[in-house]
Image (tube, rainbow, N blue to C red; front, side, top):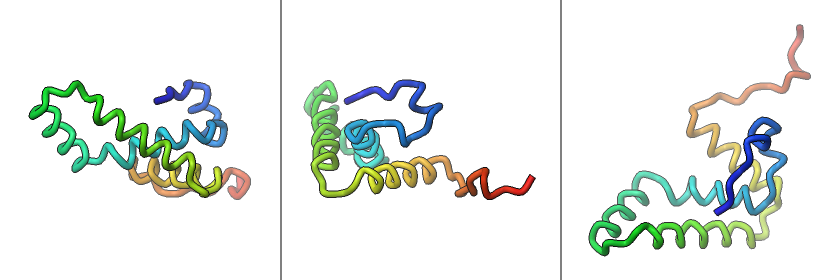
Length: 99
């Protein structure tokens, strides 16, 4: 799992590589409430240290990275996931605003 440097957050999502986008998308897909509950249930029963969950995140990320989807589409999916998480409404670019 990669870590996204803080300058990427300031610069915007368009600056991160495909693998980083896929890592973040995997977290949104696999770390939902249901999947986390399943992971916690499995961990408590098997005394696992969470490595099974990390393996699932890595597999989801790898699956996304090797998919035929374009980088632009993956970035758009990440943007939609972030926007949905923060319940943010889409905004118009500054060039469209009249000052």
